[in-house]
Image (cartoon, rainbow, N blue to C red; front, side, top):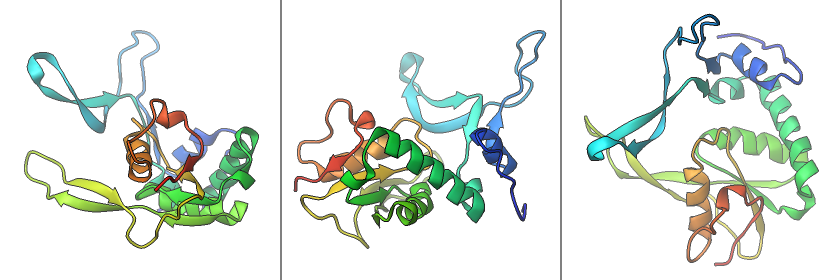
Amino acid sequence: MIRHVEIAEERHLETLRRCGGFYDCPISEGTGERMGPLVGYAGKYQGPNGLQLQWVGETYANFAMAEIHPNVLLFFARCLATKAESIIDIADIDVLCGAPIGGYSLATALGMITDNNVIKAEKKVTALATESAREKSKLVFGRHSVEKGLRYAIVEDVCNNFSTTEELINLRRPGGCRRHCPRQRVMETQG
């Protein structure tokens, strides 16, 4: 394990790469041919003849590799706080909600920088993994609770298809998520 990671300032993916958490499939300049493996993403889609196929891509970001380095975690949290402040007023948010599990450390660091309270949603296993299927779970608030009338911002480390974001919003909103929930910046509880 790398003891100390140097921050690459505005080149965030380079900082993540230095942590061992960023991969971009090399492409041949001459032929455009992929020179390395593709990466499997979370989620599946329905392919030809109803087959369930795995999403794959050329790029992979693994924030877990950054969060083990306190200087990198705080750097990214400061960058996120600055970016968030340019979009919304942090003072309008009462609580940061860390999404499992990758959002936990980032939400805590962000809360320390912005002086916001932090809660964390948890995964509750609903079906064990089998040889052909991954474990199934749903999100719950076990250790922490959500208070009516407060404004929550969801903190995730990496967003692929926004399914965790949508599930967290649905967990707090009667009637489910609004049409454009991944772009919604602040979530208010209504129940």
